[in-house]
Length: 597
Image (cartoon, rainbow, N blue to C red):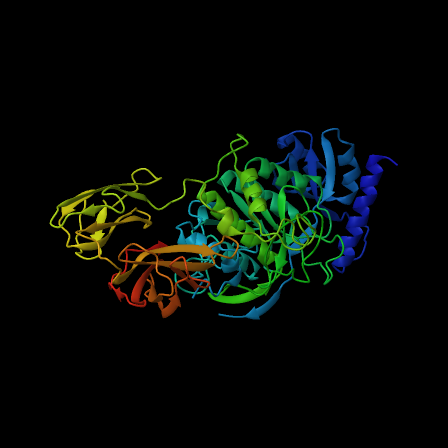
């Protein structure tokens, strides 16, 4: 059968289906069908004239792909296909928002479990909120007056005839909120609250639209310098090569596409039921997960699945200035789009040398995803749950604590009574110029303080613990300590002291879920003390919260460790309340200590 006849029969079937689905009948009149005509060269006036001569009405003439969207008489299709400049004629099929469940609903991050669950809040705390990154929301528009949303009118447009970008459906406002709801202390917060939102209305207020609108929006996205698009819509039917080419060409131009995989799944997670356009290689097909990281039963499954994200009972913005919960892969996809914006804002190298970074961002999202389900990539979760905290980790040098050393005197030195002792030390940082404080010296008895790297003093007889510390501009502290003796050391120990307080973290995806605080106890001869009871209070100086007093007993190594589970961000300082050891008197000193998460 000839190519021309195949296309003709295909369009006859499509046309009949369209008429029946809209309640119409097949009549003898010159009925028109919406099509996308691809040419072997960039269409211009001659191609437009060809369509008009065939009785067609032009909707869009594209630059992103060599094509024209139009409505043409069915009878004109064979003639168009016979034209040597026409590559193909494909139906401009309908796509829709992906159905969702809705429930009404009203401390921002806590109200947005999905954004919090993927670690975006931690990224925000580190100062990255996606600023400077353009994210396009291809959907039903936006509530332009919502107090929790901000968008850029200069990169926003409606591609739905007769409708502005104002959202009369709710779907677009909801997906926009998950990407970029403002961090303003009210309502909810988006994954990238300082990203620039570009609103491209491609779906009507009824939730439906045509793929010709999508091509036009993608073309505008490239022109506007958009870096990420969110596509929470689709169809079970393949929209054709021209639509695919539009997504591919936009991706080649540097645009990263996040897409909803579809809500056609079943509880066992069997089958190949993802939708278009998520199936195509240039889009990130996204599955929906629940709070326990299990796949939502409605989430589609397929070999093209790439990532998973929260998509069940997601609270976000709604028209009228309100908030509500939707469920669906439509809600999962914007978590990925927002995380991509955070990765871009964090800075990422163009490893390919092609002038674009979308390939690198995509690989970062894959490599840092938390594997769920079967080991490795699978049909239910792809590479796993998107992890904003790991994906958007800065690629620059880590803000390590300053390195502090005491060069003189040496640990264990003994000085005669009445001697004047000169203390010298150094402090350095891995980030050049990051130090904001000179060395600060303290002694455990006299309370002497010196700056500018050295100081001299006469200490009273006895054992002294000398600490030098420094702080950098990132509030990271480093310290070093030594013990010296002034005068004759005592024949036997009479005092007990906390020599040092150190911090460590453990647990969770990044090993920072729980805070471990270790106290080392010495006597005044410098010996480790076991079976000493240590009581302390821990304070988050950022929030003012405190934990304790807590009491523990040192082991044979002279240390006791306290654990603060699931500790929140902030700067922590421990205070020693009491130390009890047989035959020894506590010196009452808390050594300098600090830890910042």
